[in-house]
Image (cartoon, rainbow, N blue to C red):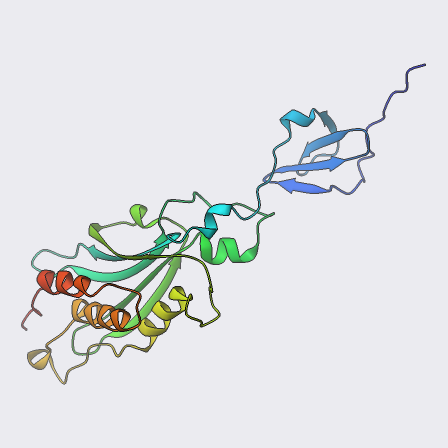
Length: 222
């Protein structure tokens, strides 16, 4: 005699959710339904999406790239410089809800470190976006400064290159002057000072300082 497996009741709690689809696995069958609907539909095991957890690629020694990104401004204005930490390869959009918060909050994010404002009174500005550096808008050019891995992330140890970069940028004094006539530095000089400090901390190679120096533009007069 053949036994027929009945579908779960509508009130059954799903065991997994991927996007807009809920899944329920019983000892004999796997079911799915769209979020907000009631009926469970059987699915074959070979068609069930398998959620991935943190990718082994996160262990790569070059998971992150620190870049100098130069942005277009108005005509006749110097290019705006920012230091950007981004995954070396585009990891794609956020994936949820089955990955760790650290993966989405840090490992897949792009961090823009910069100073803004007029040369006589600039201020530090930091923003996190969930798009790869190659997808940022108004980019004039991008230069790789260093690559580093996830090892030691946030622990402040020797392997925590991410923490050293963030610490130096956050602690670097923004350009200031009593007036525009006395202003000698803008965002470009600030980026160079950060990179110089990162050379001392072993994150960036010394020749990168020379590269930045050769591209710097003067502060516009009043």
